[in-house]
Length: 58
Image (cartoon, rainbow, N blue to C red; front, side, top):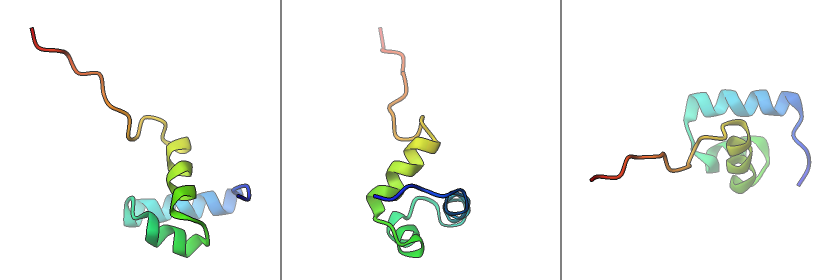
């Protein structure tokens, strides 16, 4: 797994803004695996995909 360049990160963010979380499409454009793209998204958006703290009834 190679490190992400600043230019590649900017392209990644633009693709995420345009195509959402379609990791297969985005990874194809960047030449990376869908897992690398998902992990990068989680690193840039730490709250994504984590359960929220809901109040318990009662």
